[in-house]
Length: 348
Ligand SMILES: *Cc1c(COP(=O)(O)O)cnc(C)c1O
Image (cartoon, rainbow, N blue to C red; front, side):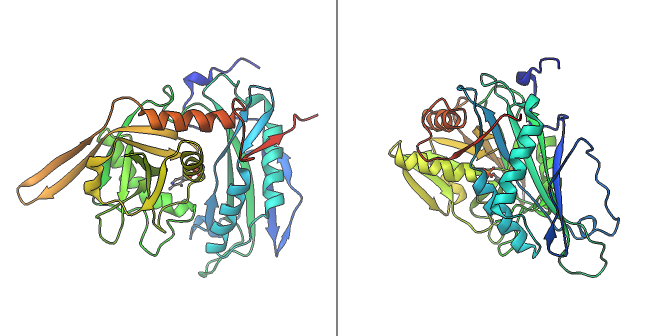
């Protein structure tokens, strides 16, 4: 196989060898199948095509400096998928099955694990969706669970820690106050795609959503959480409609236990953006991505004005320290004090 240059790759779909899938029909899970056929055969009345009973996960496998391959906190992804499936009232794989199929997927795509010294990783995408034919409105009885993989570079396709700009989403919400924002559902993305596209067309890398009830405080970016650094504090929103990011959870732990930062999970009003020293998005795909400017386009009777909140053009020192520590754990460069990584054996 020709050498892949992962520094030229972004966070996208790149072909791999195989997927792993299993179906749950009338409450019984089938034995997982590893196949190089990426085309699924589904009934056109399958629930997923109509009412969107679909949730997914995202996690990464890394080739460590010691040559061993690690998955970062896959148990957290298993738990979150279970909670998403519960919200959709449909069956979900248990922890053991989720982990087993992730391991099988990494092993089947071993050739696509990027080298340690690249910015790349093998991104796993587990997806669970309703597959039984239906027309009436009810939750899916039968589901399919598929784990697929892509050998990705950084989120932006550039070097890591390159800052981007964001705009506040004044006219579109990602999730309703008592809605599904806290679950990793495809439907949340369907809801935000249009707004996302508009932001991209305006030249912004990120869209920062506000709380849907009052539009006065910060929730999260389209596909990643928000955190900021200020006066030795790690500040991140506390809201049931924000997706509980595993990256954010890990950063909070490291910030508090190792870097002596005070962790504050609380309401962040828009005005407070002015006072932050460092602002970032965080998530599995973006890891930590610094934000250099947030624009707020406020519509007045006289027209639209843009308020700008400006930050450094480089990653802030505290954020960079957090980034190094997380990557260090993921690649086995530094000690995994918390036992976050799960090792995957090379296939025989
Ligand atoms: C997946 C996701 C995140 C990031 O979660 P991680 O577990 O850190 O990958 C943040 N926000 C949204 C909306 C997401 O879908």
